[in-house]
Image 1 (cartoon, rainbow, N blue to C red):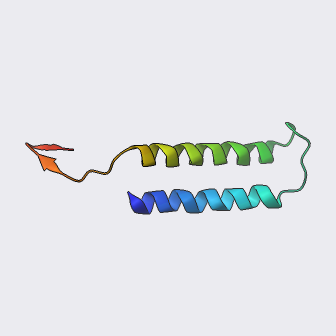
Image 2 (image 1 turned 45 degrees about the vertical axis):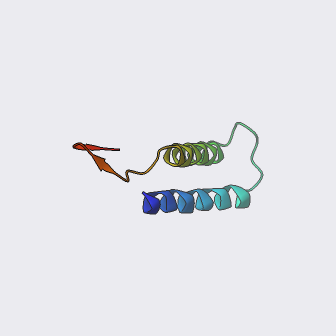
Length: 65
């Protein structure tokens, strides 16, 4: 799980760098820029979901907790 979280953080950093280096768009009219913003949002949501879920650490009565 940590490696997946690290991969998401790495991808998020890459997307943020692309957004930071992107030439000034016309707000709402630049499809590629809007796609980068969408990708950043999706990555941030995945990170939040992963951080909210505890890691599987125990085996109890045949069930993982």
